[in-house]
View 1 (spheres, chains in turn orange, yellow):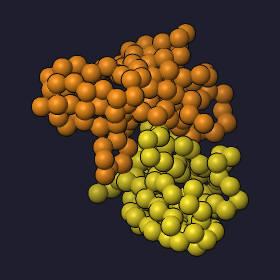
View 2: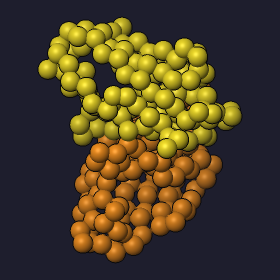
View 3: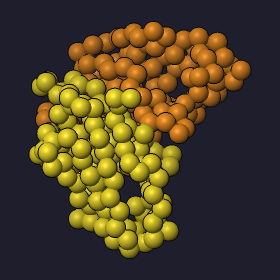
Length: 113
Length: 116
C-alpha cells in the first residue's frame, strides 16, 4: 500500500514560474526522499531530508518537512522545460523492519514553454 | 556508465510462461532492492538483500516470485507462471548501507514486462 500521497496529482505551469508539490504520509519515518521520473528513464534521486531536519536546499530545490503534520513539500524555483516529469516522495520507516522505500502516487509536473 | 543496470529492458511473454530479470547494482553497494511499478502509481517495494541475504519480503511477493543474489553482486528476479496482472515495470535499486538507515537508493532503468 502507498503511505505517501502527493498533492496535486498534476500541475501545469509556465517556464520560469515556481512549482510546489506536497506530500503527506501516515506513520513515523526515518527520512523522506524526493525522486523524479521522466518518461523512458529511471527514478532519479533529488534530495533526502532526515526526520530531525526541517528544511533542506539543493540548487533550485527546496524541501521542507513537518513531522508533526506528517507532511513535506518540494519547491522547484525558476522552472525549466527539462523539469517536466513525475515527482515522487518516498519514506523510509523508522523502527526497523523493511528498509524498502514507500512511495506515493506522484505529482505529474508539466512546464510549458 | 557505473550506475545500476537491468536486463532485459523490455519483455513480452505469454500467460503461464516463466520470466527472469537481472539487475547489476553499483559495484560497491551492499544493499539491493526490487520494486514494481504499475501505470499511474509509484513504485511498490517487493524485497531487498543485504549482501547475499534476502532480509525482507513484501506481501506483494507471492510464491510465484523468487529473487536471488547468489554472490552478493548481481540479482535475479524470477516470476513463474506469469499472469496478466504481473504486467508492470520492475525496478531495481542499490545502496551503500553504513548503518543508520539514511542511505540513498539509486535506481536502474527498469524492465518493462507485458504478459499477454
